Length: 85
Image 1 (cartoon, one colour):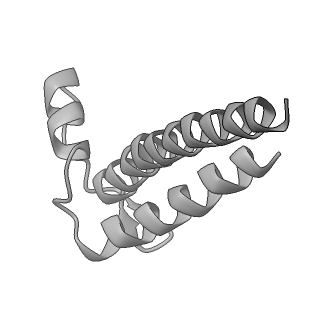
Image 2: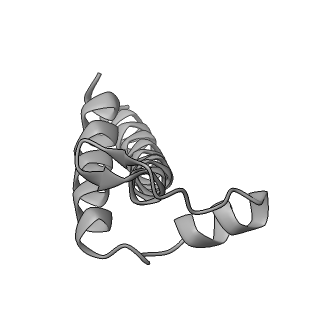
């Protein structure tokens, strides 16, 4: 359950950071590689391409931090079990 909170927290942070810094990697690289063009339609006052960048960065950075947390948590829990024996 805490892993989901970690993902949501870092998704939100990187989503907002990308709204402030639009060319924050890796979203421009991923969307460029996929051939998705910059669409200038306005969605809630923001260009659609900026929201796409923000969502991609949110998912990527949220996943990375969730993975780091999960690995660290499993290492700590294994270490705790082996010390109690």
